[in-house]
Length: 159
Ligand code: BEZ
Image (cartoon, rainbow, N blue to C red; front, side):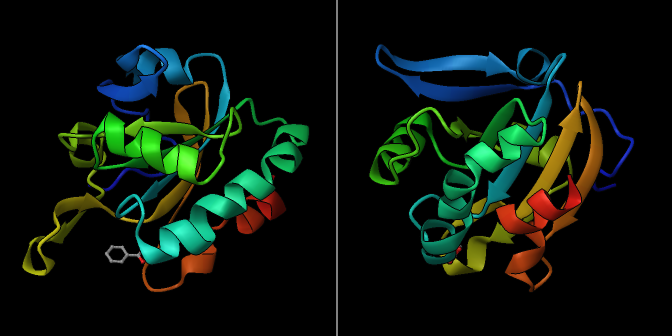
């Protein structure tokens, strides 16, 4: 069943790119004791994700933090090299953590799989936006055709 408000975030390992190469970060460490705004996208460098979704969270990072968000994170079923390069290309700096869910462990455990096999993209993650308080989902929106439901602006309005 798809993850929903009240559910605990699955305990899995994700990857991030650092100056020393890819590093592992567990969701337990990432979410523990923090308010996290996390959004998922079907793919790095894809049109909607690059033109609207990620830039919206970069632009609104300070406003989200002013409303109590400690960490803003972007997740995609891509490897850490790709997520690192996309973050650099989008000038995310330290505003948005670029999380690689390379083997879709998080995506599968949260039942957020978007199967784009027929389009040559394999298993991906649905576009979503969640607010997570100390490891428990407090709100989640999934894109079922309306990108705006998962935007930074919509999230700001909710906080
Ligand atoms: C996008 O624009 O976000 C997108 C396009 C093709 C595949 C996946 C995502």
